[in-house]
Image (cartoon, rainbow, N blue to C red):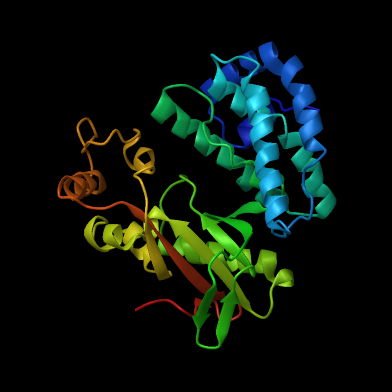
Length: 311
């Protein structure tokens, strides 16, 4: 069981990259296939549910790390491509799992397109075809799905409690962590459409009519929202969809998402070719701090509205 050109085209890999990927796979597939076959045996355990315990979560991360390390060890001079091939070899197994569970093929294709987004990011940041992130195991464990513009990771609420009126989320309750792939414009209309579609997808697992969406992201960091994001921009509107209940400091690890380069402690060399980038450079040079915001959306799928949206 393996991937082919048609599958790569379907998940959005560009033609020039498909040729290279197939050439590289011809070199490495004999060594990667056995690794993928063994890893595939663990896929899709408890679909649509968060990892049951902290121990299970740790094991999933360790299993992912070992799989990637084993793939990289095949050729230490070609790590990004080998990581990509390792995940591509799992796609046919996941497709079978989706079919067994009766999940619509459109969601399978959308979820797998995340790989193509990461290929493009790797080309920008590292100058080569491949991937340099390894959270795809969530997709393959049937914990993360791309539904419309946004991705949803079935997760457990990490804070002690979140309350809005009579609605209470406690530590360990199931929430749907929101991820924002680099797949185009982030308009309010697309996000609301995604929330409604996600509600329909997950509603049999919900308690009532509310889909609780957690987002932990630099996009919700209040100093960025107020001082960096252009007023009235899609980024600012997206952040204000959430009730941000806390912000935490962090290093500027998201620099590559904004500038296509990793942060080296200075703005020297960072491109200033659009408003967001210029605003960030000014913010950094004026002593701005870095961090993440943690926020919630309570989306009522029957009313088709966010019930806790801040004014």
